[in-house]
Image (cartoon, rainbow, N blue to C red):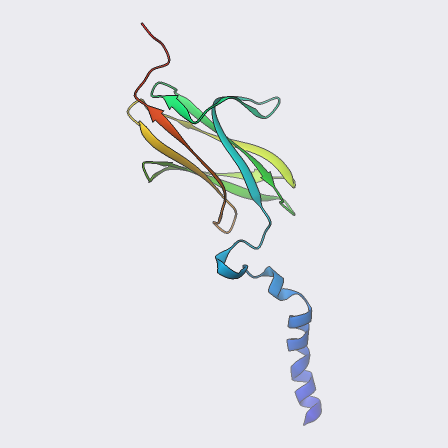
Length: 147
């Protein structure tokens, strides 16, 4: 009977020592990856240098389009992130994009209608849906051109 007990114990020892627990989410619902982002917004994006042109926390209502650039750091393997754009707390867009290395820059853009003034947020989510980066900006009633 003791041999049968030992055979039953072997899978339990394997699970405990085999590192299976490391694949589970971390305590508190945090992501098990070390993924994090530096996130910023701007009017334009230089695709050659993968950098924002004219980053700012505020834009006039006639801005047309806002770009959100995320530098994703810590991806152990190819994965994806999701940009979620919020206007006054309401989800306006969700865009999933690939991350192909451990230090990767990617971006999303959003066309902004002139009537969409007020506060905006962009949250970058990992594949588990956890926020790994975020930023906010304001669309004001002003215009870029003066007559």
